[in-house]
Length: 216
Image 1 (tube, helix red, strand yellow):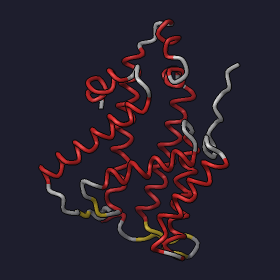
Image 2 (cartoon, rainbow, N blue to C red; image 1 turned 30 degrees about the horizontal axis):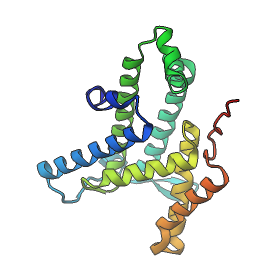
Image 3 (cartoon, rainbow, N blue to C red; image 1 turned 180 degrees about the horizontal axis):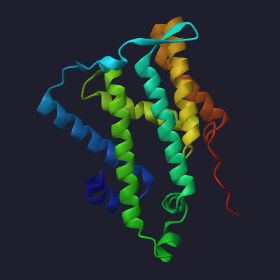
Image 4 (cartoon, one colour; image 1 turned 90 degrees about the horizontal axis):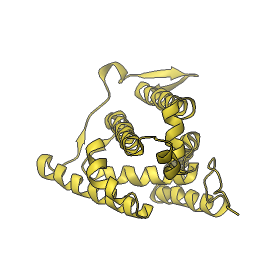
C-alpha cells in the first residue's frame, strides 16, 4: 500500500480529486487482470472455520456463529479507528490534512509520510474486510469491483468522513437488500440504489455526514 501511494498517487495529489479516483480504479482493474492470469477466473469458495461452522441460538432462533464474529470484529475496528482519529495526535493530523494541508506543512508536520501512512492503513483495513468476508461467499477476481461499488454506496448513504455513518449505511443497505430479496428478488439491488438516490436528494452529505462549510 505504501509503495503504491509513493509511486502512483503522490504525483497526482495536486490535481483534482477525481484524478485519484480514476487512477486507483485503473490500478484495481490492472491488478484484477493480473490475478486472473496467475490464478484463473473460476469462482472459489471457502467455508468458515470448523469451530464457527455451527449456528448459535439467540432468543430462540439460530444465528450463524461466523456472522456474529463479523459483527463484533466490525464494531471493534470502528471503535478503535474512532479512538485513533479522535484521541491521538496522529489522528488529529489526519483530520487536519484534509482541511488545510499547507498549514500542516508550515507547522513542520511530515505530510507526505502522513499521507503514505493513511493510504497503507486504508489498504490494511480493506484487506481485513476482504479476509473476513471470504468465508461467507464465493469469490473471483471480479468480486473486487463489486466491493468497491458497495463501499461507495455505503459512504454516500452514511456520510463521507463519518465512521458511524458508514456503519449505519452498511446496516441499512444490508437490511434493505435482504428485504428486497424476500419481497422482490429480481429488484433487490434496485432497492439499494433507490435508497442512495433518496439520501442524495434529501441529505446530499449523507445521513451522519456534515454539510459542507460555507466560506464568506
